[in-house]
Image 1 (cartoon, rainbow, N blue to C red):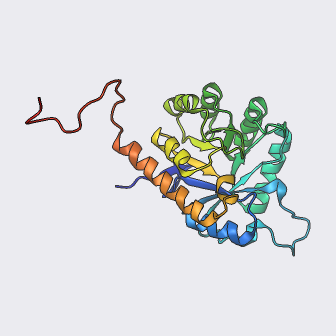
Image 2 (image 1 turned 60 degrees about the vertical axis):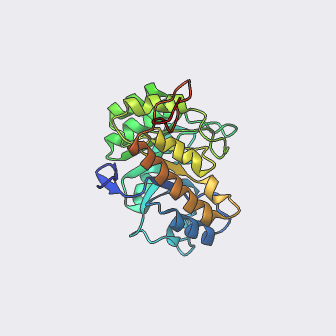
Image 3 (image 1 turned 120 degrees about the vertical axis):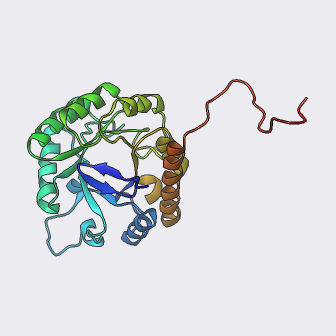
Length: 256
């Protein structure tokens, strides 16, 4: 039975998206992403050096016939900056997909809900498939779904913090109400975090720092692949109810 992730009409076998930031070397980046089995790779367009056409960028280290590129607007502090970066990304990569990030304050890196909403509205009108990074806000998520975003991407915890998922109750509400795929993004540290998100019914996760900064990125990439697979399989299988009392696992003949 096919169990694919569908975003903006495109199907994927993997439910793990990965980022390209913070890797110690290009070799580690490429090998860890290959080991992860991810098919969607996000690239910060605003952080590419495009001034010298002869100089290699991250874009030159991947076979884009194997991966779907997801340009992101990281570094944008306002809606206006994000819109300009998204349009630059479309020119550079040829895709109308964009991971929308509007983050005004570098001390906590939390997304701006108003700027995100305003930028998403204009980008959708301009023909983009918008995948917005947001706080785990069920009301905002619903508004973005209704607007026509291709996913919603609520944070688990602060970017790069490795705190795991601190917003699970809000994420569950988003999952229950969303009409598009829900991708848990930011703060995931270990594969069990990814598994937890998929077990709860999230459609996918996005992981960057946990893989890039691991002492062994290739092994961690593979581990996240397995965590996502386990979480999704558990969600489809269905968990047993939680009970407040013990229930014998071997009842029957001979019991007193």
